[in-house]
Length: 589
Ligand code: PEP
Ligand code: MG
Image 1 (cartoon, rainbow, N blue to C red):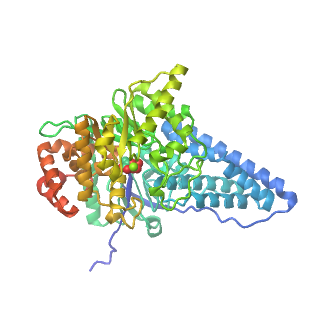
Image 2 (image 1 turned 135 degrees about the vertical axis):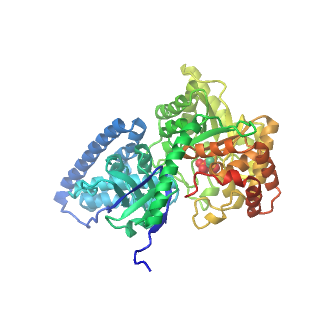
Image 3 (image 1 turned 90 degrees about the vertical axis):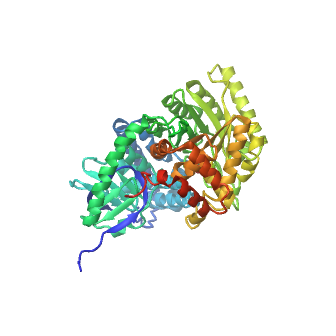
């Protein structure tokens, strides 16, 4: 029997493409302990002075980081530091801390620590990834200011090593933005998501990264060998011979796929029996538009605009929004860009709008239901969207619609925005298309009535599944019940596709289901005309489309409609499309 310990394998979320092998370097950073120090009344002014100096210093450092990131990676990546810079002006942060110093005579470090803990507590009441990502910005800023106030050394020193795999509980955007890519080959973390700011920077820097690995930072030891597969999300500590071979074959497979993908990006999404499929990209940030175009997207099928509001302290102005929308419209000149009005509420309320206290936020004031109470916010957004129509085929999409009246109220606000722009002489298209997202069973069952009021429909499968099955989409405990293949879901998709066809309006699908091979084929087979997926999935779905026959996909989907359970759906699809589905990129080997 061999006394060599078997390799330890972790599975996490792939957040930046590529595969690498290197030597573990653990980074242990934590918010420093800050003693409860009360100062003499005579020292209050001194503490306030120290606090303001630390804020000025933090601002200076962040501005430098932003400028350097702009030179290194571009203007969009540089804006990742904006939320932190804005927090330095936020009265909640600044005045809140000053009050603790002035009224409670706390030392500046303690007062700031305390205030940031309170904000963290407030923001942590959701487990929505977008808000959690902003918590990571909060921690980055907190560390920066406390390090200055407590005169602590830089926690990120990697020494002079090369071939480093950085392993940490979580990372921060400041750390990743300054990484030397000649020395760091991969990143592996316990926490974090695809939309964490550090993960976005890792993708721009092309450093393979896997997040959400749970306890990797406490298991790994400095100097161990680690393989990080940023495509499958698999991480191996101390790979044995078998794992080493597997690494080599994955590496050459990934290189092969990259070559194939580069070729596929230039090809059309056409099935073997010559049906053209529209494949568009979902965007969470304007900076992803470039990759989406390079990956051959036929346009943008969902541009989520919440990045402009969530975690921010003030409502975004029209100019800022217009610039972001225009950037994407110009990147996709001549191709459709479906941009969604703010989908606020439920689990994502920006701090500058007081979130309503609700027993069931996911069934509460969400999506288009927020509009009547926040007309100024939406009017500004519609003005910015309309102005962007002068630069491309920009179409406006409304989330969580249940009734034609909701569409009518958006149309009326859109008319107000158009009248204003006309009076001000600002250019825009008078023919802008308006669409409704189908995200509830009510909307799916009434799709025919809704279709009569809009120019297009877009099925948001993430919410449609959540509301059909009454399963919280954010709950990890219920994840096994979140079943996109449930026959009740398929029947609704089929109804919506039929309603769109009869009304002559395009039906698009933009939830995660469209990015999974089985889900994509089902949606197409049920009659959805356009799929929209995050850009990393585009080429895989295009490759799938190019390998199948639409006649077979339709036959399989219509057989699936008669299934009585999702396992039956899966079996029927495997039987008829198994050969096409079996060759997916995402499989771990
Ligand atoms: C959806 O619900 O499927 C969707 C695409 O919207 P979001 O994930 O932003 O709610
Ligand atoms: Mg949705």
